[in-house]
Length: 177
Ligand SMILES: Cc1cc2nc3c(=O)[nH]c(=O)nc-3n(C[C@H](O)[C@H](O)[C@H](O)COP(=O)(O)O)c2cc1C
Image (cartoon, rainbow, N blue to C red; front, side):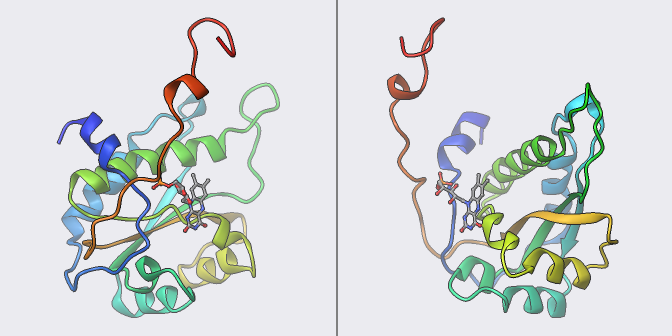
C-alpha cells in the first residue's frame, strides 16, 4: 500500500475486532514507524509501552464503557511523554507535537498492515485514566501517558470521517485566497 492509499484508508475505528492476535512482529514494526517520526531538535521525546499481556490488555480494555475498539483490543500502544516537558528551543517544548507525529506515523503503519485503531487522548485526560493506566504499566511519576492506541483486526469496514473541501482549508500564498 503506498502512502497516499494509507492516508485515504486511515480512519478512527471504534467497532468490534475479530478474534485474531496482533503478532509482536507487527507491533514492533508499527512502533518502529513511530520511532522514525520527526521530533523537535530530534530530541525523540516520546516513548512507547506495547501492551500485549492478556491480563493487562483485559484490565485496560475494561476501563472503557462504550468504545468497542478499546473493549475488544488485542493490544495497546501507550505513547508517553514527560509530565513537565523541558524547554529545548528558546523556551519551547515540542513533546506534544513529537508525540502526535509519532502517532500519525503509527496510524498509517497500522492501516497499511490491515489493522485498525483510534487515537485515544481526550478520554485519558478525565477521571485520572492516564494515571491509572500509567500505574499498570509502571510509569514513573515524571512521565504521563499522552495517547493510547487500541489495536486489532477490524470486524467491520468503517469510513474516514468526511473532511472539508481543500478550498475551505487551504490556499496558495494568501490566507483565505
Ligand atoms: C488530538 C486527538 C484526540 C482524540 N481523542 C479521541 C478520544 O479520546 N476518543 C476517541 O474515540 N477518539 C479520539 N480522537 C479521534 C477523533 O475523534 C477522530 O480523528 C475524528 O473524529 C476524525 O475522524 P477520522 O479519524 O475517521 O478522520 C482524537 C483525535 C485526535 C487527533
